[in-house]
Length: 107
Image 1: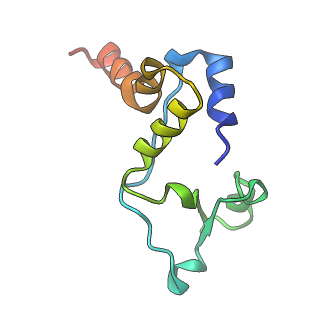
Image 2: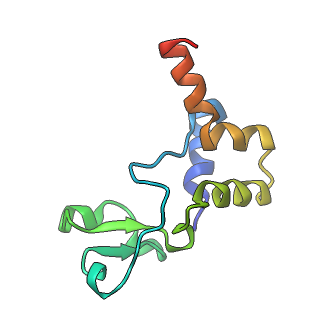
């Protein structure tokens, strides 16, 4: 997985305004012959992005290396390995969302 997108967002917006979210559950997605027609792994850069969604709105893209219930942990571990501070990583994988919700709705 390319971490350039996350790192670019941090450079542009600052670490207090970047977060990893998911519109999907944290459970892994089953990929087999039955689901293969509507599921495309996003491993190579040319398979990623909204290009597929425009061509076929039923195509679901995911990063196969993160197809695990530990996906946020895996992202955190990778960012730490790329020498991001623990404080920054905590913000990106959830802390910024918690802060935003507190700011909007109060404690």
